[in-house]
Image (tube, rainbow, N blue to C red):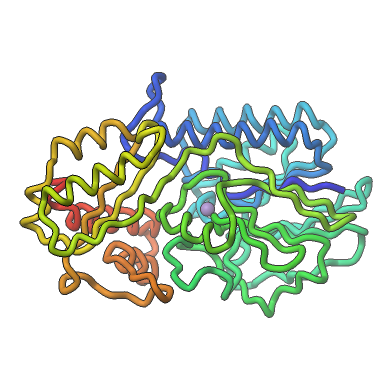
Length: 392
Ligand SMILES: [Mn+2]
């Protein structure tokens, strides 16, 4: 009994200003390719069931292009594996604030996909001796939290859920997606289940022998650099889905081929350096990349650079780096006195954008304000201010 466990596909995600020759945002194309590649691998693996644990689309109203692409890819699985249950549950990104809006993912019921959008639903497949309790985001934010226990009717019992399991995200939670439902560890007994397939956290992580966040298929959180740090801390590199064999308990990582490379260059301590010295160090860092900047998403943080020094940098060279890379983020930070020191993980100072992102993510909002948009706009604003002399 093998389950393909995917989550946080975020189809329709867009970032940066580069487009494909066909005029599609390059990151949207990357995210689509990551899903297409995963579907290719699912067809080879021939699982007995496919679970997509929420955030299939990046937004409640994806573009027609994203919807058509999603339909085609799900249809490929349906056609190749006609008897295989495909279970798609809604995450916080898939769930409209008003039920009147409706969930686009319900469209896929037309090709015999089990779509679970509001209440938790127990799906039973007697021929597989399998039951799946599918718990979408909406089910966990209502007044009556669902009972998260198996019913004991089948040999294999799977819990699939889109939520934050309390206390399992990194202490510096800037990589966590905001707006997720929180489930207390005490309300969940993984040992009672054959497997627990989680969605919401974008870095693959194992919470119990049989309980996993499979992670996103691409870097689609608001803080991809934090995702890289979390990956390093967890000994994970890159993006993948999971193939869980419920009979043996073996869970194997299925890497997404050709994921776009994100490169966080070693930061520069800018204290007391002249603009010319900084220009040289920036060039040195960039030239450590054997295959150059082309096609990569690259960040270089420089600490402790006063405004008047940043202004004198070689902006023509910096513009050339920006033109070459898919995205080159030169993150120049002011001297200590101007920096807000946060409460991040030991040894890592929270940056001002991180502090702001975290605050906006927690701040109570009127119901009609979309949290993700609110946080995104605030983060972009603070980034544009702190990059002022270089970006402005
Ligand atoms: Mn997500």
